[in-house]
Length: 102
Length: 102
DNA sequence: TACCCATTTGCACATTTGCGCAAATATGCA
DNA sequence: TGCATATTTGCGCAAATGTGCAAATGGGTA
Image 1 (cartoon, rainbow over the protein chains, first blue to last red):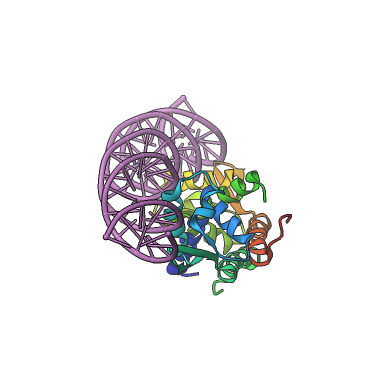
Image 2: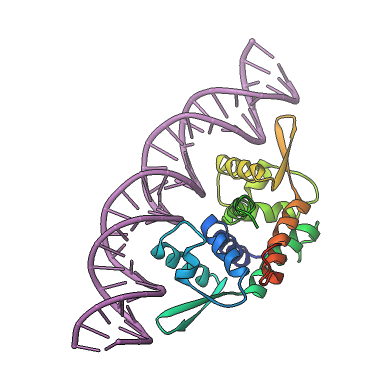
């Protein structure tokens, strides 16, 4: 696993590793329709500007997707991307033993 | 997923979400024998005291185990624990849709 | 005992981070 | 156009974080 991969993965984990952001992700996880930011405000103890910033970071890390819809923005979770990234690490951790190339 | 679970998971992800710590984990991942801290120093750009602190945090989060051996300490990765935690989240993210209880 | 080596800890410092508030921006609607 | 609502951004602040250095600790060995 090269440096760049490690850095990218660290970025993703860091983005997920903050309670309010992880709560946002969990909330999006339980919805199968995109949600706007005001709606997402309810699930974490942060005001609208804070939620906006958290969502921006999550978006930058590819964790959520944004879709402009009128004056609202709809956020949805990039389920397969996030899950696959987590599994890449899980697989490496569980199965890699003494193998240089993996 | 209740608040406590989210907090615990966030703690784990946060611990993994720092480049040098993730490098340490990856390094331990590629070893099937426990490693001491001096040896682990080589894989990240931090001095011994920094590595010590990182390992302490990883240990607090249950990511690594420590074994005292003489004046050294041997660190090993808790592979199955970390992998399972990552998979819990991956599974939730990928499969949970509109199910309140999961 | 005296010394060496691995590791931890206290300290100071710079940087990052998360936050609320208020103002700015964007967009729909009357 | 004027207003209401949704979201973003600038600002300042307090707390957390990562780091190196030097001293302290723990334990092996001559």
